[in-house]
Image (cartoon, rainbow, N blue to C red; front, side):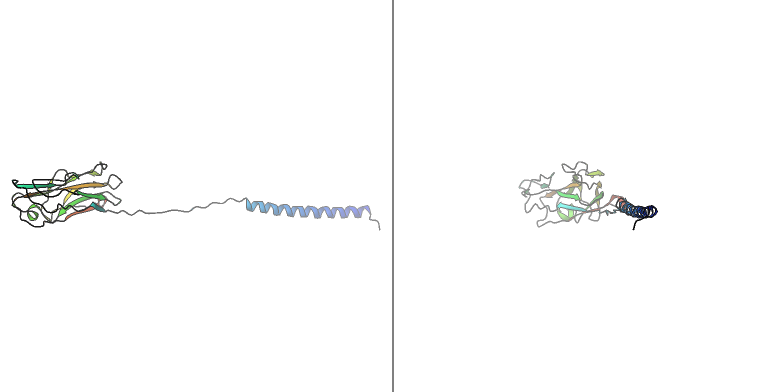
Length: 215
């Protein structure tokens, strides 16, 4: 059976339509695929941390012990001094081995002011004729700006035990700027009573920013 020209044209037209329809669907699907894989999107998150303020001090060298000794023959008194980490004894037989001043460190993370107090003064600790019991605050080598303000300089006599003395208004906390040395000087007269003589030195600190620090 022979197909007429009209029939052949009709069938070819249907075939072309089918091909075009299929191509259109394929292209649409490809476009959807590329559209999905090519999409860009962004979002954001947050990081938050709070560093709490801590006012804290520590004595890294906390014991001064001259041991047993006596006023030398012919001397009216003996002087014992930690003397800038190079202790000496004058007019007496006490040892200087391993003797240093107190080393106080601000191991917190805020500037603090520091006070000193003691359980004895010269009379109650040593007694005798003209005893002395003194302290001196200083900045150690390598910590030149440790005390930013109000360093108490010179040797100061321990007063009544209820009285605190401020030795630094603003002690820094950053590395190599956070230490003080507190030297101790004792004068023992020849008529001082014998026996063990012990005293506790207390250091207190509070944050400069708190505004509540008192001597």
